[in-house]
Image 1 (spheres, one colour):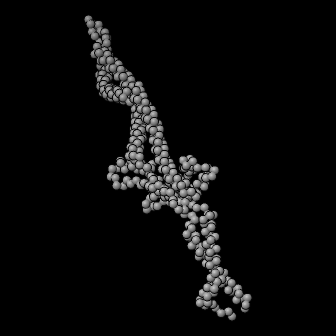
Image 2 (cartoon, rainbow, N blue to C red):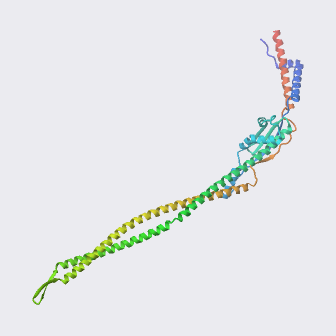
Length: 396
């Protein structure tokens, strides 16, 4: 059974193989130094920073001003992810290539995008642009130009969106104005119709007044008819007691002659009958005229109701059209006032530009050599221990 090696023996074993450890360490450091200094291409890192503005309207008491600021905020304020996505968009990267006159074949969009890193700090609301490149100056230029292009692109987007919003409102104003003018013309033509509400109502009033007169006349006719009928009945009763003929003696001659009283009453009876017939004829005429007037009044009332409904509908449409037109007029003024209130302030601006890096971030020669020293020593100790156990195993 093999005995365990004590720490003192292990140290002695390593001391005896110190030259092996030394050689492996030197070789590891030498190889790492050669690779770090001559084979690994240095990579430089340049950083620029942008600050994302925040618009606050919660402290404003005036609701109208707050509304305007809300409009401006909606046009300008974006989520930080929007700027991160936009910074790596083909349009922005192509503009960077164009401004720096980079070779698109040597540095296509995919390569340029891989060199760029973006990070947003929530606490400070700062967007950091990091660019890694084998040339320090090119990394600096890309970081600075990308920041400029991003700001310019955001400003351009804001202007385009603002112009689109105002153009849309102007189109709405034009449409609502045409609609308002059309309804106003319809309203004007409606009022200028020959049979407008005023004319029909005047005709209705005249018909109602005529109906009232006819009804009064019909009532009077009833009274007159009753009087005439009463007179006829009286005369007829009187005639029943009066002989139609009377005898008259002249010189011993007797002759019959018409009773003048009877004749006079009969004449009065005929006159009353004629009067009654006239009254009945007039009553029939009044009834016929009344029926016509009733029909005309009903027709006029229907026409007045329809005209009033049409007028009310036109007035409602006219009021709605005016309200819509004024709404978009106010919207346009609010949009323009909001645009002027924003006063050139953009939601993102450059906080600091990138400076030329003095040392590469890759390779870190000091760290590489230190790691090579440690790894070389460990390899040397492994070789010494392995050799010791190998020899002992062969002897046993």
